[in-house]
Image (cartoon, rainbow, N blue to C red):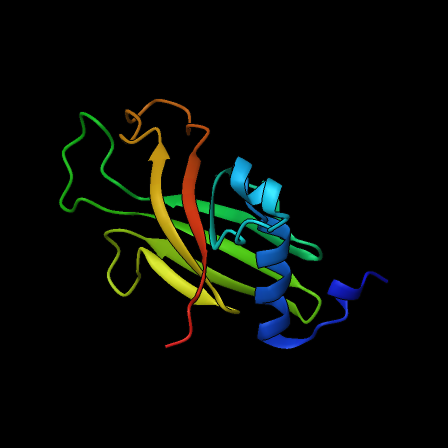
Length: 150
């Protein structure tokens, strides 16, 4: 087993993600001096419903479901509705699910789980479909940040 996978708990998860993220920036000065660039503390992802991304070794994030109850384009509605996203975060300790939404009562655009903060950035298509249109293939953009201890 790889030594980075032996770590347990939130600290181990944060270290594994920091290590896996690395940095795409490699300046000449750092290379010549033999210094490693600082690890990235965030990354952005675009997910479709049912899609899974690997955040670090043995750490995945899946967009489980998109729930769009927004008023359809061209329809007359008594309320605006909302769109929400159900995610499942899985690591060696198990799975945890969470919900992200911008305008849904009781929900938030950002949530922190296992030392990571997940923040909605946007969705495609941004407008709800017309009443007779098929459900669109939603794509959700989000940023994952390693939470900084306070």
